[in-house]
Length: 100
Image 1 (cartoon, rainbow, N blue to C red):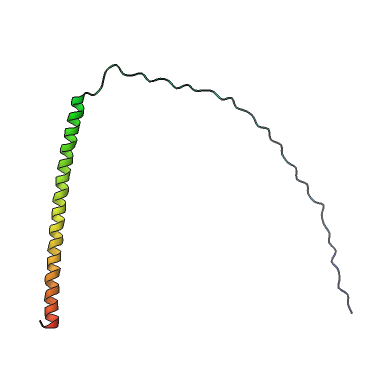
Image 2 (cartoon, rainbow, N blue to C red):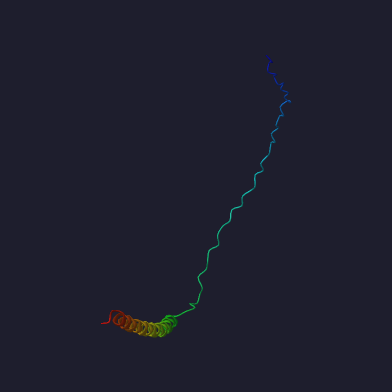
């Protein structure tokens, strides 16, 4: 009976890893002091400026809102027209199909 041949293992010597040593440097921290704000001596806007600005914004809002309402009315008119034509078509086809 033949005997099984045993394989010879050849191992290379293990490689050694070297660790790198890093040095850390410290940075100097500078402190920042915030500057105080100075109040302006003269007021830029008066109460009348705010009132006129508010009134003009309300006028612009009202104008754009009426345009929006007009667009909604046109959309409803178009939808109403198409729903009515569909209803007429459906009743006409129902009557012709079932001879009513």
